[in-house]
Length: 102
Image 1: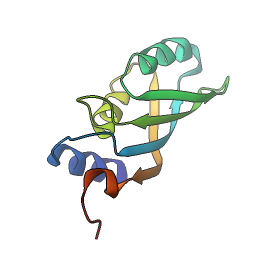
Image 2 (image 1 turned 60 degrees about the vertical axis):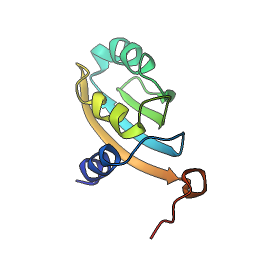
Image 3 (image 1 turned 120 degrees about the vertical axis):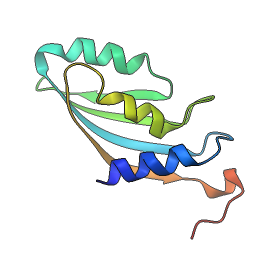
């Protein structure tokens, strides 16, 4: 699973500064949509861009002070009412980190 691979890689790296931006498609139970929305909004680096009545959401996650985007996304499946989480986009700015991407 790509999300698990991404999360594992992120946990191994030292955290220096904001450098990851992730686009996530999230599906929540429609009857728990307000609770899921509140839980997501309480997490660092999370922004909800669109929510459908059927429970589908478009979310971005960025690294936040002291928290990797991957660690934040790891919390999504622990929120009651979340049915699925899909990493749809990942941007890594290697210049900010001073690293070479191979």
